[in-house]
Every structure is written in structure tokens, then in C-alpha cells.
Image (cartoon, rainbow, N blue to C red):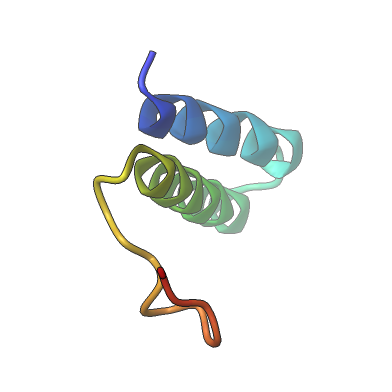
Length: 59
């Protein structure tokens, strides 16, 4: 399974812990899923997040 898919699933599972409370928690789950997908895609090398993390550059 690709790392981005794994990141997406991990983000969704972490969000499910708190997603029992209504629409606000659903939006939080979507945010966690998006962050999980972005981190997974970054680990695969499909996207570069160095521009949004201050002080970190690729050598």
C-alpha cells in the first residue's frame, strides 16, 4: 500500500476517535485525513513540503 494511502487511513482512524460529536468533528476528521495524505505523499516524494516548513531545506 502506498505511503500516501497509509497516511490517509491513519489520519482517518485518528480522527474517528473524536468524530463522534457532529459536523464540527466531521470537518476535523477531513482536516486530519488531508494532513495524513499530505505527509504520506511527502514521504513518497510526490510533493515537497519544504516550502511551508520554516527553516527546513533539502540539501
